[in-house]
Each structure stands twice: as structure tokens, then as C-alpha cells.
Image (tube, rainbow, N blue to C red; front, side, top):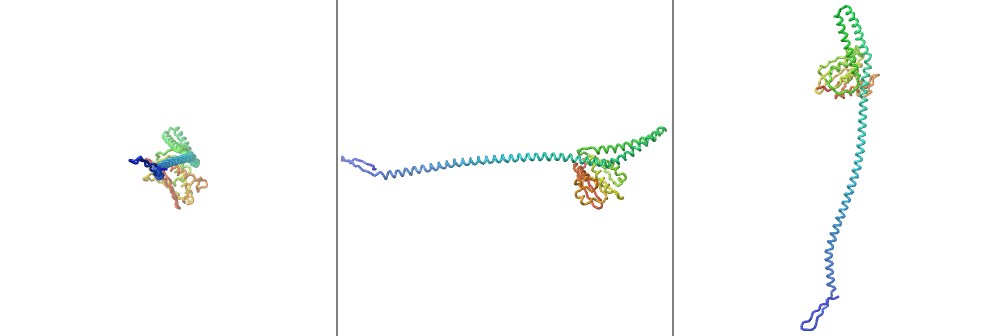
Length: 336
């Protein structure tokens, strides 16, 4: 292919035709157009590729985030189910513990009551004898008073009637102590005169240990000294300690049980000391363990129950023992 160029020749009728080969210019133009197209298309393709990559990356990121959310939700659901099951198990265990604690409190109260009734059974025969003596005396005073009245001797009759009234008060004191001591129940702590507690315990032990209570040397506290607790339950503690001390000294001519009371900075201590043979080391190590006893007919529950009673009122019991004797120390909270 050629490019024809034609032009007239001045001052002649001729025309000059010139044929120029068109292949090289066309090829150059094509190359230029191709280069131009390449320069335009390549960036467009790069931009398109970049946009496509961003789109695919965004979709992949969204898909990854969705998968992560799905996995997180699945884990949250699984964890929630695990926690729910753990909560249900914990609630069941708590209910079981509460039920067990309630049953334990019932059993503990039953043991306390059983120990109390056992003490009553031990003193019953002596109490009957203790009551029979004033009853017989009352009968004699009544007969004498009748005789004095028949003789119109009012002064001796009034003396006999006064003696009868004093004896009936003595009987009433004994029976009231027994009835109060036999009552069942776990009462809240209240201010109690410690002197009344000690005297009440001695009254209940008097009949059983008649003739041996001389071994008790008690330094009674002033009536105004009060501790937190319940009189009947604290009497039960002291009866257990007095009884153990007196039984440990049975048959000894120099038997002595000293009871002392001391006020401390944070409460009141009651000490019960004896000069007996002491507690064997094997028993002393587990003294407050149930059914641990050195007595042939003992159950080994008296000291355990006493410790629980004192603990109920915020106190504690300590013990020390050697060949020269044993000392129990009761720490009680002082009433405001």
C-alpha cells in the first residue's frame, strides 16, 4: 500500500504524482496506538485488579469475621451451658449441704438432749432421796404443829409451819431445776448470772454425789457478773465437768476440785481443776472426739456436747492435764 501525493507543476499542464510507501508509517502509528492503549489499559487493569482484590479481601475478611462470630457464639453457648450445669450442680450441692446441716443440727440437739436426760437419769435416784428427806421432815413438823395447836401453843406451831414452808421451797427449787434442765431446745444467747449457773449445777449434783461435794471448793463470782448464754445449757456444761472431776477423784482421801472464776479483757473464764491422776495422753489428744472415753459405761459425748454448747455462745474450752491433775478452762463472752 502506498500513499499517493499529487500536485500540479506550475506553468505546465503537467501533474506530479508521488507514491510514498504507507507500511512503515502505519506500522509506526499502530505501534504508537498500541503503546498508548497499553499505557491506558494496563493502569485500568491494575486498578480493576486492585479493586477486585480489595473486594475479595473484604469478602474474605467479612467471612472470617462471620466465622469468628459464629465460633464465638458457639463457644459462648457451650460455656453458658457448662456454667448452667455447674450452677445446677452447685445449687444441688448447696441444697444438700443445707439439708445435711439441718439434719446435723437436729442430731446435735438430740445428742444434747440425750446427754441431758442421761444426767437426769443418773441423779434421779438421789433426787428422790433428796426430796424424801424434806417430805418426811415436813410430815414430822406437821404432826408437831398439830400437837402444839391442840395444846394452844401457837409460837412453836408457827415455827414448825415456817420450817415446813422453807422445806417446800427447797423441794420446789429441786423440782424446778429438774424441769428446766429437762426442757429441749436451742435458745439464743442472753445475759445469765454465772453465780446462778454454778449453784444450779451443784443443786443437781448434790443428791448423786452426797457426801462427796465437800471436795468442791467453789469461789463464787459476784451476782452482778453475767455471761452470754443460756442457764440450762451452761449448767449442763458445768455438770459434765464437775461430774468428771468428782468421778476421777473417787476413793481419794485428799480429793479436791477447785472452781474459780476470773474476769479477763475479752470475757470471763471458769476454771475447774482437780488433783486426780490426770488424763492418759492417748485420750487427751482426742478428748473432744465423739465416743472417746476412759469410762467403762461412758459414751464419750459429754465433753463433745459441752464444747459445742460453749462454741454456740462464742466461747471455747481448753484442757491441760498431767500426773498432778487436770484443769478445764471455759472461756465465755461477758454480757454487756
